[in-house]
Amino acid sequence: MVKPVVFNGCSVGENPLCCFDDLSPEELQIIEENSVEVEYKRGEILCKQGSFASHVMVLKEGLAKIYLENNNDSLILKILPSVNILGLPALVEGNNTFPYSAQTYMPSVVQLIEINAFKSLINNNAHFGYKIISMLAENTVIINGRFFCLTKKQTYGRLADVLICLAQRIYKQDKFPLQLTRKDLAELASMSVESTTRILTKFKDEGLIRVNSEFIEILDIDKLTEISLIG
Image (cartoon, rainbow, N blue to C red; front, side, top):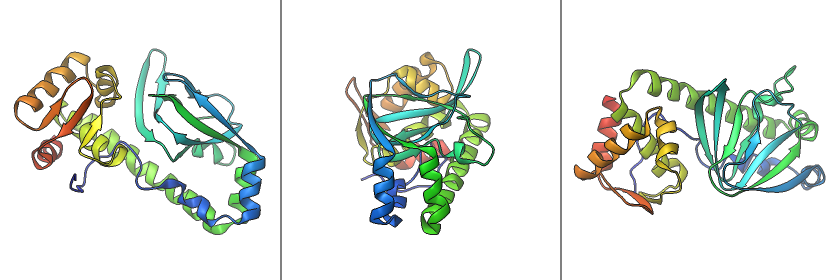
């Protein structure tokens, strides 16, 4: 089992959907009556930066990335495993557009909840609203950590961060399937595919990880954490 450590994570923490536990049967019925479930293929767009936000999305199955776009450039803010909510910034008063784009890394199932119905639950249920605020606050912490990692750490530290995040926050085990391509990993670490491949090979040669075409396994979490902290 991977040891818990402090690092600049790329994803949210445990069970963000626990907020729905605070809803009454009648409120859950409102969700049911104002939502639809949609299946997405790998690489499909869940929402587009600047587009009208008519719904909040619950990623029930799959894996997705949240990113900013500017012409031909993009910056990944975080990655989302299943049982996560996206689109919460669109709840801000006076804002009716998505401030970022989201795209699937793998086939995914998403529940689209009509945004006004979602807002009504926040207005009428203080416990539910508090947990939504907590999620927004956690997202801010994550994104701040990401910016620190990408602007202050060297390539080895950035890739170490990504691998630790995948193990601890996405797959929650030290051996996980290689569902992301080298290009995906490179985008997460903000480096070239060539540099990503070279550093993965070095980590492998030094006995920090085991990697093949199907999985990555972290063998020395302490050393990988040290590389992450040193940057």
